[in-house]
Image 1 (cartoon, rainbow, N blue to C red):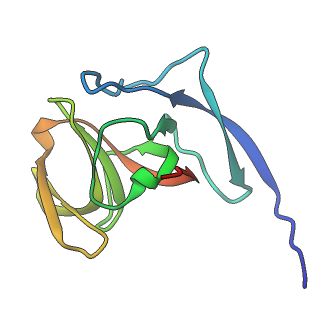
Image 2 (image 1 turned 90 degrees about the vertical axis):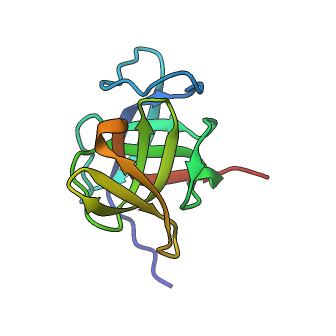
Length: 140
């Protein structure tokens, strides 16, 4: 058996540890007190404004990310079909799903079986980002 050691580094990401149903994700996550230590490999990139979000938030989850205790989120405006996205509407609801562009004004959210589950209009979105990674498993 061969053990390979890969170079890695730790970056500190802003950490949102509570997001009540009546709160919106801020467009710029700035916090002085709460950071999450995130380990990345040498060839990985952390995109600007990436943040960690605790999973103790109310969410409509089509892809099963609720089982992770921390979500790493990259704010994005452009997605590939099939990217795992997290979106918050202006009425404060959070959704996750696999992205599929429906029109230039709307996005379909699919589940892991590629079944359409919901349609979101871009005009109704407050925040949209890519679900980069889930960390830790919640015990049920």
